[in-house]
Length: 279
Length: 298
Image (cartoon, rainbow over all chains, first blue to last red; front, top):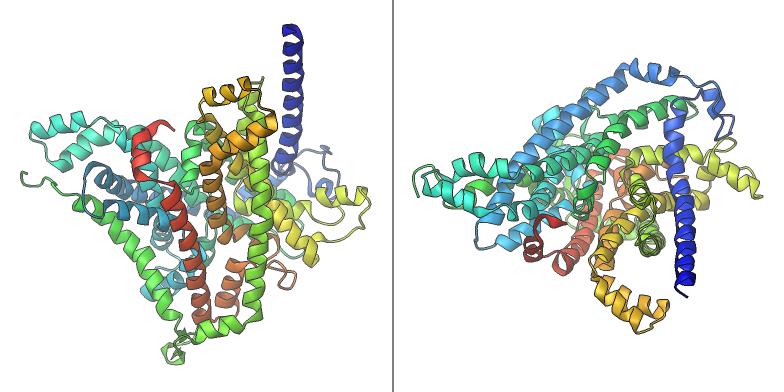
């Protein structure tokens, strides 16, 4: 009987494994084909054999690396992502500290408002932002798109950080303040080093949010500050059949995201459940 | 408190509040203001005309607005239930230890982190006639050779399938975490009682998972309401108006038809709808106290 049960359980486990693997293949096919197409010649891609791997080449990558418009867009994405991350994590950390270390009237309302702000559709803001940015000269500037990205990253970072901050032991701060440090000094010199793990997670997610963002970049940037998602979307259109280059460029954009995703595994659930990852 | 020390939270909150006011609250107020004008995108100040609720009246009478609203609702009502069922089923299935389980779970999540714009382009590629993999699969199953993105029904189906593909693992991830939070004793007790799997599922597991299911549902609705880039690169809302979801139509009105006032009225409408769902989500499912109690664990 016991043996029978064990065998049965083994068979079920095996069947589940096979089934999961099949689903996984379907789920990963679009990703794999993007990675593979970057190394295939367009003529092979257009032959319609999804698994043909003849004439592997790095030609598409060479073209993409020599595509000055795309490379500039990649650089813009990195710059905007880093600036927006630094801005939203520093400002967001301060706000999260204020919310998690002080009791004050309207504290809950304030915290929840930030969460609702994170969930607003970009299209609801982008028309007004376009008009406002145009009138103050922020359209097609790094400052403009950085600020726009911070509008969703700041609320996001605040909510990501609050649970991290709560776990930081207060006694170190109390000791520092008894020793005569001001709140501010305590925050910078005592609290921030203790809260580093949370800040790293928040930085990574804030960067990915900015890296993936499409609609603000589409409307608020122009030739000079165009980001990579916009540049890559411009690669395919009409009858231009350069899927190889499109795939190579896409792969370059996916690499940082996938590296972070794997590194951040432990924190993914929280990262997305406060409304992350969407562009 | 000594000089330079912050005894109050205000100095910590001010920078965030200032930026959020400048790039979020003020633009919303401005959008509301613009929505009361006939306001051409490129024209000078002279071309603007105050029309009160005129834009909102125009919207109610605009067949394009209703079209985008129905497409948007259809998208939500078709895609999200499927994502929830897939996500829950996969979570129940994978909620056991098997060799390679960790790797499988990690790989399953990759589509969630596939850039939306890249996802849209890859799907566009797979749907192409003659060489696209999905097109070839359908042809081998007996469908005629056709451009799936040039046909109204198949294009609409395609944007829905794309969303299901990318986002059911997101639901899975939430459900899996939810399941992990249910104490084993509860499940074991049911097992000893001899409850069949079905009754265990519907009488114990699903009620226990209800908060997670609700969170997933609301998060997905809020997200689906603002979908833009995937559809934009797959179809640009076409063919015709067949995939012109709400954000795409607003974008078209503002930057295609250059009617910023009318687009702002749409923006405000969508904003109110999203706030409604967001507030429901926040009030029901995300409590600050709860988050603080749980701390940094999970």
